[in-house]
Length: 486
Image (cartoon, one colour):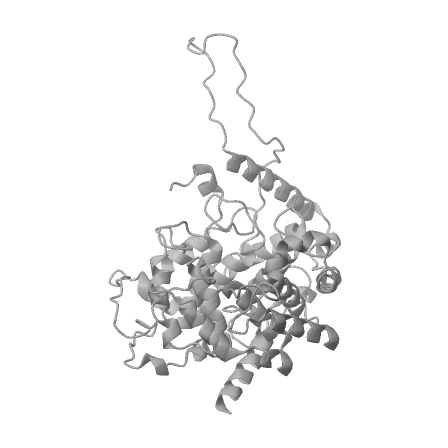
């Protein structure tokens, strides 16, 4: 796989820790034609001396990239030429509009949404998590309706399907559990049948150590993350579930540094986040080559100020979270990064025969079943960042606020696209990550200089390993720990 020289040149560079240079302005002019016109004909034999050489044609990706850069440049040009008062207004987060869009979606969706019938727990999660980031609470009746609906999606043998009576699936189980944790009531948390959920996850466990998404479904890093994340969040993660997962994920890290969905596939932002987060929850993060992973993620932020999901792909607002959170996780792992960066360090750790492999602390337990897996997620978020932002956090906020917001409410992929609940959720999640990425202490608040626009833009902090609001995570953590001690 080779990089396009134009795309390699146009991607941004990673600033040194803590520095925040001025957000770049995309220089390209808009290009509305979907194809490059052929070079002008000279009217003679092209072999004649002095004939104009044939110009190379642009690829479809290059044309689309130029068009996106042009649209983004036009938006940024308006900002940079505006008077100070206008700039302040342009950089506001339109909270009320977003709240209205998300809340209305919980109450009614049009007939076109029938295509998402197998994703109904996801719709709940995208909207409820988005509202929680905006510090908006639901009324009791609506909360209870959602808990009742998700209970009907819960299979009697464990796991959640995409709707009542549908096949249980790890992805929709993740969405359902995150939704119930975000609601946070005792009724919501008690509705999760953890024993059945554990049995379902064991059934999805493959002999390779990885997980499959559903009975007879695909095996990939996404399945591994959703299983490990849910099991950790509800405190059912043990050695039987953890065994072999870290080795499988490590085998999916590519020569570029990012993580693919399966071995020998292409590095992808979503899978990179899933793989890294799962490895932290398993305490096996040293099995990854973290310096190359950080480099790959950092260079996915380009001249548009947002992130792309893969090399040579277009910017997309959802990767504000998938890539932004991945590199934010790395800010707490710099001790390991520094160790791996030394010439004497070997990134190929020898495998061990215990149930969970080599832990990131370097200690292999003879009885790994006694490991407190839930503690890894709890302790991780309490750690302070070991460095400043490893990406341009203010530039990312600029892309989200100016290019992803829709005036009528909701957020989108990029200029020219329509709003939707998925991008609203992950753009807001990425905005929260970027706002809090420069914090030095786990309990401190972002300083105004780390925020773009008015301080009222500040969103609730999330737990970056699960993508649930931090306060809701703390409540759920205490609830499940107390229930296990009863």
